[in-house]
Image (cartoon, rainbow, N blue to C red):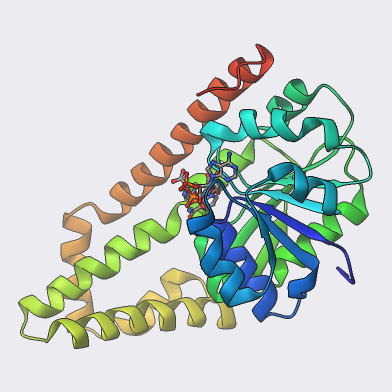
Amino acid sequence: MLNNKKIGMIGTGNMGNALIDGLIRSGAAQPENIICSDASERQLEPIKEKYQVATTTNNIEVVKAADIIIYAIKPQIMASVLKETADYLDMSKLIISIAAGVPLAAIESLLEKDLRLIRVMPNVAVAVREGATAIAAGGHADQDDVKLTMAIFDSVGKSIFIKENYLMDAITGLSGSGPAYIFMIVDALADAGVKVGLSRNDALVLASQTILGAAKLLLETGDHPGQLKDSVTSPGGTAIAGLHTLEKGGLRTTLINAVEAATNRSRELGDAMIKNFANGQTQP
Ligand SMILES: NC(=O)C1=CN([C@@H]2O[C@H](COP(=O)(O)OP(=O)(O)OC[C@H]3O[C@@H](n4cnc5c(N)ncnc54)[C@H](OP(=O)(O)O)[C@@H]3O)[C@@H](O)[C@H]2O)C=CC1
Ligand SMILES: O=C(O)[C@@H]1CCC=N1
């Protein structure tokens, strides 16, 4: 699908780096077809060394050279980088933003021209090709653009296409931010393992593998999580004792509140962006 299309990555931090890694390791893109930029050479040097991709500190160079441009910089500087590169953006290029909370409408109001825009919410697991990604298309992006974007993010995990843009905040709160919740849960489970006598390393390996195994069971069987939970809880056994404690501690409510808080924060970021971008304000 990607064939020899040139992919430009603006920002090579957590996500930009993870995407480059996943694209190359999956074979979806060749190093010679990737050019990336970052604010600092310090960030680019190891990427050039490891992936043999073209690197530059000049974002305009990336935009000029690429057919598909992925903006992987922080939401707070999206406006300034979009403005910086705006003169070189046109309908010949597919523009993908992965910035949390930045609505397509904000980008369109800032750039004030018809562009093939796609908003994507991936997560950091793209680095191990197990990303969870949602894709929403702007008004001038067509089905082929959606297919191209899905080809990129399916090469580093699983992607879904959503029709309603406003759901992107919920997706940012659930799967975009979700790896952080799971890392905290694994850290707590490892502490629990240490508390009941395991070495830190054994506890961490067992806790991580338990999360991986449970996720694979869910995805490969398609069974409801409640059904799988019931398959673990022997009558009068250990798992149900542990679950009772989790219920008493309000685990479900806490997780629901966490996703809601992250979703609301994404909405806040978006509302601020729409206001700032509409005023042409490009500094956070
Ligand atoms: N981290 C995650 O799990 C996820 C992040 N996202 C989104 O992805 C985007 C990137 O996030 P993340 O990778 O974590 O952020 P990072 O800060 O790790 O990466 C951003 C990179 O962009 C660089 N940068 C800063 N200014 C410029 C500039 N003017 N031109 C080019 N590069 C620049 C930064 O350099 P320096 O560090 O020197 O400032 C940094 O290396 C954000 O919009 C975020 O909302 C989406 C889903 C998940
Ligand atoms: O915390 C953030 O804002 C970014 C977006 C989703 C995950 N990390």
